Length: 304
Image (cartoon, rainbow, N blue to C red):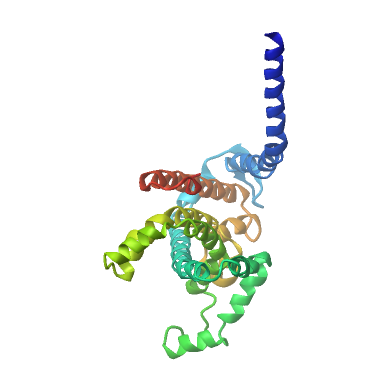
């Protein structure tokens, strides 16, 4: 009996060792580069700022009051406007990515099976280059002397001496382009598992193209779509490079606002408070996503 118990204990020890070997590096990475920096930022957010923006004692709630818009000059709605603009830009970029992903995914699905991995690679390949380089490319494509801007001039959408960049349209375009692969890949994974008998049944019942997609295709690809929404919306909400280069002061987003507090106009406690608030809203968004996924009956790959 004791021999059996010792073997069971030995096997349990081996399982724990395997778990630490496989999961340990990831846990250490999360601890070093997520939890510890977040804890440091949380601490800095409760400090006061000296004349140079450095965190100093005494402890204060003034940084969070600044986030809410309160200062010595009274209340200002600027931070709320930036926050709402960030939500709107992230939401619009997510919708554009989803709208582009569906036809691209089903175009790939219609190709021979041996060709599909190569087409997916072509979609993912641009994301292997530096984001700054890709964003500068869009800055040239949407600048005042670009053909797209000439068309906008002809349609009287922008003045002749200006381009589409910098501006909100350029930011939306840049965000949708940069995060499009993160929508396509999970959507493609769901599309591969489609039950085509349901689609054929809809055709037999004379369903039109839109109804066929909405009732037979969309529910089956919903798990991949929900995963793509998270992979696009969360990083787009806090993005810094795209709004900074393609938006400038005309389309300031929360990522740029936070970066400015640590660089151009230093105020570390204020920047830390902004970061903590952004993380809180991101966490709330993930919780809401999980609840929505369960209500919609999403599959396991769409849950967190």
